[in-house]
Each structure stands twice: as C-alpha cells, then as structure tokens.
Amino acid sequence: MRHGYPTDDELRRTFESELATVSGGGGLRSGTGLDLETQAALIAIARAYPAITDDLISAARTAFAAQLDGTNAATRRAGIENLIAERNRRNGFEPNR
Image 1 (cartoon, helix red, strand yellow):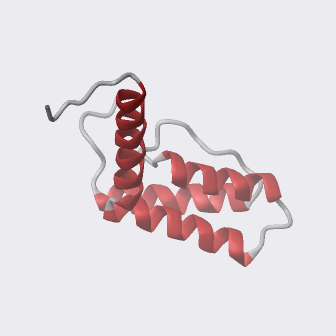
Image 2 (tube, one colour; image 1 turned 180 degrees about the vertical axis):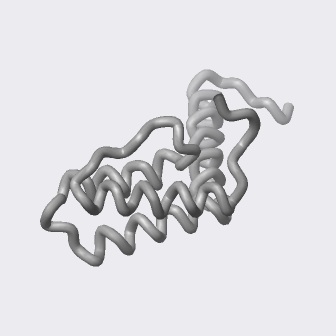
C-alpha cells in the first residue's frame, strides 16, 4: 500500500513504464498515481494498438506534462468551480452577499 503521493520522479518512471506497456499491446494498471487525463491518453494508445500513431504518443506525453505542471488539476478545479457557480446562480444563491 502506498503512503502519500508519488514524487515527480516516481511518476515519470511509472508513466514511461505504462507507455511501454500499452504501446506493446498491454493494458493500463490501476493505482499508478497518473491522473485521469494521462490515463485517458494511455488508454487511447492501448485501444489503437497495433496502429499507434506518433500523435497518440505525443498526446500522452502532453497530458503527462500537464499532470506534472498542475495544468490538468487546475482545469478540473476550474470546471468544478464553474459548475458550482452556475448551480448557485440558478438557485438564486449569492455567496458573496
């Protein structure tokens, strides 16, 4: 059982291992610490096997870079905040009042 979050180096090793696995026709493991966007990109590679394109590999690397730099998390957080704000507006709730 893992305690705490994986380090960036651990995530990099995991990503490269998972990329090699799905590129070779294998499946994606669960509980890797990779975020949903990165997992989705890796699953797209697994589904495309054996016709894996450079664009799919590039998309996976881009998604993983966005995980490491926090872009994926910030995008998810902003989406959730927007959903909450929209629901509050529809229900007449004004939290800053």
